[in-house]
Image (cartoon, rainbow, N blue to C red; front, side, top):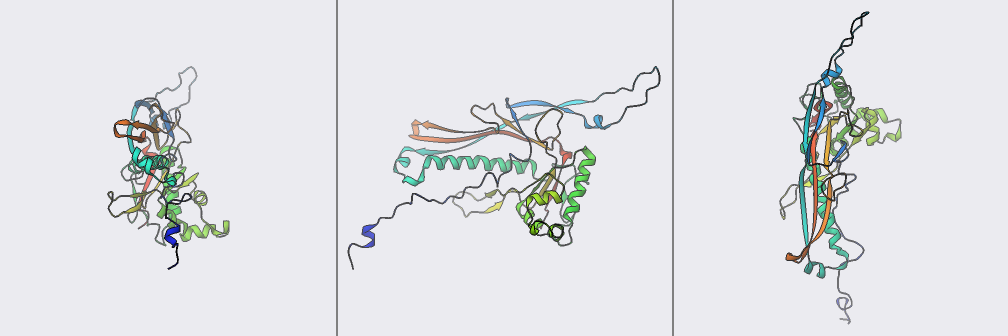
Length: 324
């Protein structure tokens, strides 16, 4: 055997120009900070005013006879409240591990990315719990959730009519509130199904080379935007066989989202974020790196403080099990 051998002239070590990490794209996969307006607040909890819709929509103006008073009236006013919960997560980087790490690992950076992903994924999970589920929305024709196989033909059935279904619910919300829905959120599998639905393909076959995009669906459904969240969650315990699934499932949400929070502004939901938390930005998130001398380690810690709240249940409707 010739000497020196291959193992003599090269010792395997970690490459410095590549590594493999499954980091979700927060701009494309996550939507918790995009659907409803963010309301930065200075106090962790407080109240806001709610004006009676019924009083504003009732017409009580009348003809005024000569010398007589004008018709008069008033409106009812109430308050509601928010309370931002603080959640957090950390990862410790001890001195011995840092000192012994190979160059490409950049452990402080990877710890920060890991903690940030945990905080943002938790926010997506909370968004689904607070907005993208049954029992919350009343704007539909039935005043409750629309369930595939019961209230409409599921959209993966060739005889279904998704454009008519969504348009009908838009009309229902508009009739109840005076505001037409401007936002449609589709689970990724629902989006894929609609892209291949014969009714939709037929309407665009002579334009854009028949390619269906989120913008084209927005035009077909007469909304300003279609959002497709692709967040993925592993529901298995640590070290167990992973179980991955799309977080948003086979459902859809249609609703009105205010362009921005403001006085006299209705919206299906608001995302209250506590920017008063020291170091937090407008979205109520902060990442800290501080010394844990007793552990001979640095702690990378993330915190977020928010309250996701339905403030106009009649401004939205939820399509449960939109596809089989």
